[in-house]
Image: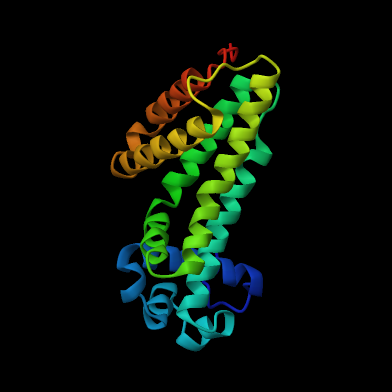
Length: 200
């Protein structure tokens, strides 16, 4: 693989690689201590190279936050819909994997959301839109007689988000437990949602 600074790397690929490096730097240093100089050094490029793609540190951070949000929004579009239990299994595991992969960035976004209304809105979008989609999924299943949740669907969705967030913290610290944690999250979801486990 060519380095980020290589002329053989296209502009879009270079931008994505810079964002990959930037995510690691923001996670390591936090928002306030991250600088364009730190980003450039970590990427092995000059500061003008970073500025060619992002006018400021805030633009880098916003692009990263948007990328994380977009990944979360795409999650439920790629799941197996052959049965409610399979849909739940794939959606919960994908949500957990994304939460684990971006755990550090989600923490930095949450910290920035305390002082930046635009970041608060984006953070809410990362969490709330998947929750609303999940609640609608459960409401359709209830209407079809295929689910009997223990609490209203919106509450199941919020509970799952909290469980996934905590499980992601554990998975970051203990990656060898990720498969077990994912399976337990699915089992808890199916039980809370009152969905028969027909995965076979």
